[in-house]
Structures are given as C-alpha cells and as structure tokens.
Length: 161
Image (cartoon, rainbow, N blue to C red; front, side, top):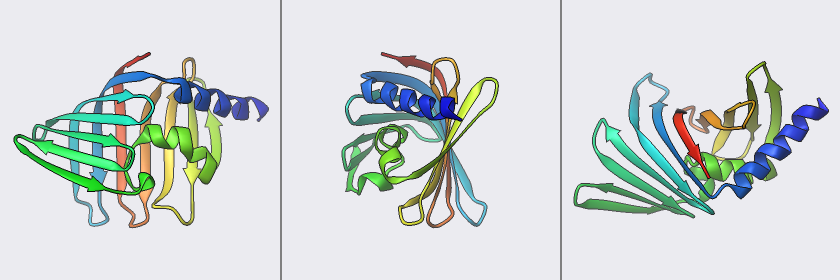
C-alpha cells in the first residue's frame, strides 16, 4: 500500500514539472439518455495552464483552455466562455490540483496504475485516471459529472518534455 501512495506523489510531481505534452486523442461524451458524440484529433499542453484541443472529427475546430477561459474556434467564428476551473474537462488541471480537493483511491495491476478522485460536492463526482506504470504517462481519463454525463478521453502517441 505504501508503494501506491509513493506513486501518487511521483505522478503528481511529474505533472507539476511537465512543461509540454502532445498526444493524439479520442474523446467520447455520453449523456444520460444514451446519446454520445466522439471527437478526435490531437492535444497540446503547455505549462503551467494551457491546454489546446485540435479537433479533426467530426468537424474541424480548436478549443483553447487557459485558466478559467475556454475559447472555441470553428472557422472564422469563435466563442469565449469563462467557467470555474473545476467545470472544464482538463485532465492536467485535475492531476495538479485535484489531489487537494478530491478523495483519492489508488489501484495497480501489472502494467497500469489507476487513480480515482471522488467528491460529493464538486462538478465532477468522479475522475478515473489510467497511467502507464513504468513512466506514468496518462493513457485514459474517465469522468462523471453531477448530472451523470460521462466523459472519456484516450491518449495515444504521447510526447512529453
């Protein structure tokens, strides 16, 4: 058990020190009535707090998340939203700040580490992170919000600096 808590500290330190990340992604959002939509493309993360989604499918668009701002750009149109940080689906924010405000549970198997963050009073009720065991690369994030919507993001071809 001690080893798992040591790994939480190592994972958090890795993402606190991470300067840059680029990865291909597939994100699926499912609502309670069973409808879902999937997005794919690539993301970049620039420390300390800028996450960009370059979406190729189903329609080409970009989403920039910086602090509490979320900017969506589709062609020549753009939309700016100001949201609380914990409302925006930004896994890297939760990796750096989530351990402070969420209860956590850690499990491990031969190749992966699973960290589940839970809360009774925050927008995301649970967030499950799946990491590669040998280098702590984030492979998958599965989250549920207070309305029961499911958000899953799978990452591939990950480059970290």
